[in-house]
Length: 147
Image (cartoon, rainbow, N blue to C red; front, side, top):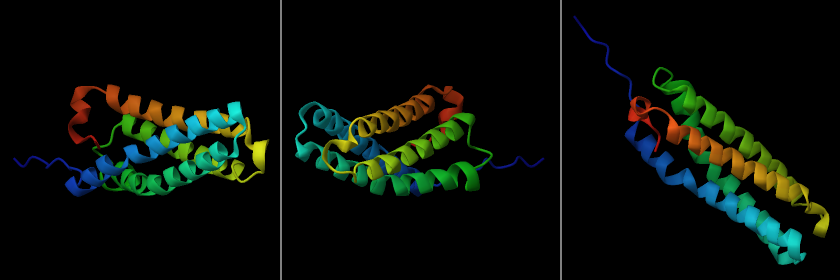
């Protein structure tokens, strides 16, 4: 009797995902801090810095999301769990919020407040919730975890 071989995720893809996935979150958290400081002080430096941090977060978010897309929806459909799907969609919505935030940061001076702060809060919250969903899934499902 032949046992079907369990499909596994690529070790290289897991390594790339594990290495690059935390980087955008750090940029988005720093962007949130800069947005809050800008809202409190009105110093232009903080608003421009937040715009750069959010843009860099978006640049670094592309590769982990592509790896996540292929592993959750294309190559490892049988292995991926509901937590993987929830994490994927929360990160997609967070990236959409960050793109909108980048557009908000193109406004002049103090016109970015309060929209930039709320979009930064939304982005950071969605990514954090996605990380919590992945962290609290049952241990039997962690065998094929991304990172």
